[in-house]
Image 1 (spheres, one colour):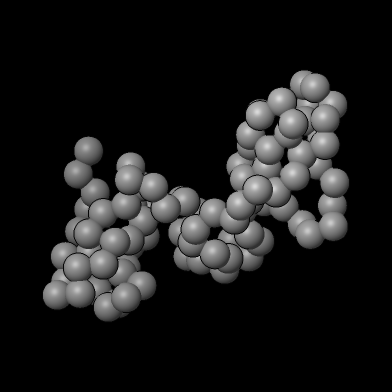
Image 2 (tube, one colour):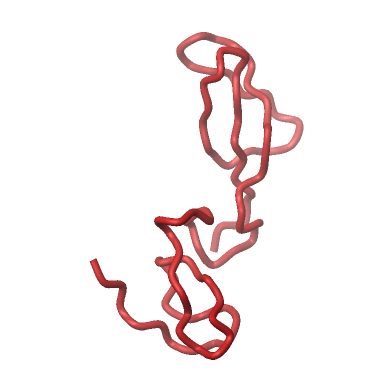
Length: 89
């Protein structure tokens, strides 16, 4: 289970990267050398049982009566606790 939060980091030249970040640490763009700053935290917030960010291509419906969205890399629904069916490709 990932314990650290993932953030979207952006440099002044609009290059972006998504990575786990520590508060108070300075991150630098490896191509331009510009300092990157956190512009947003990715959902789900840490700690989470999933490594996937919330996005259309990473989510599916649970299938229970709650009809909640869950990440595709989870085996059990975090809302109802039921086992999720295999992901169709």
